[in-house]
Picture 1 (cartoon, rainbow, N blue to C red):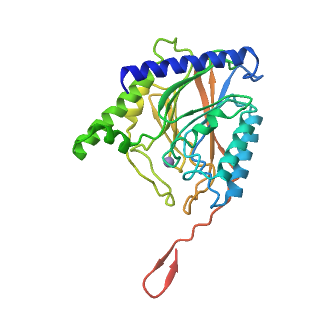
Picture 2 (cartoon, rainbow, N blue to C red):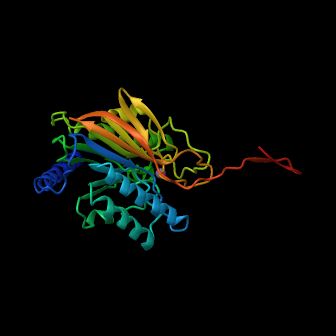
Length: 319
Ligand SMILES: [Mn+2]
């Protein structure tokens, strides 16, 4: 990201902040409550009409209701809304779900590696009570007007596509390309953190990214598609966020950077065999710009029974 792009994105974030402040004044985005700001993080929905679509829609409806009951102020989606380039039926299901969610809270989402470019951007144009913001690149998005009165900044990073970057670089070796790509990505992360530096740090900064981290484990069932980039926690730390909300790995897991949690909520349901772990989404609470706690909320996802067996050429033995 060059300086010009950073300036442009900053201007966009400012414009959005003004819009959020206008909504706040009109009382559109405001929840009654206890002075806390509550953020929900959902990851890896994988809407796919060819695979247990009814369950996927039910679980997301359950989340929409749960988010409303918990009086959530902001809903983040960390990518892979769709399993592949979306079909009309899948887009309608996601539209209905977003309409439900935005009755209560604004939504911000980033593109995952499974989401086709511009598939999510459609929802930017949806008429909803609270706004929807979709980020397909990297951008700082500010939400204003919650109970704490200061709002939240979300440093968004969609799945970085190495092929796209390399095609711009022209003739370089694989090794050079990898090095340039990783450096470029670090600059983006650094840029996201730097953009808000002029602001007084009284509002929390959440990093929302669809990324593969070096530390992550996958459940036995999840095939990882197109692993272009792997980031270390030290790379993510360049953002300087108070909370890192990640998408991509379906097995929920977490680390910390200083005191900031780095969390994969995991998928809200079982998308492949072998995902025997509990499934859910994440809720985090902020008070006056400080993270005061977060938890995993388990969804009533359909159980999957994993049978492991070995075949020695003659007999099958269940383990
Ligand atoms: Mn993914």
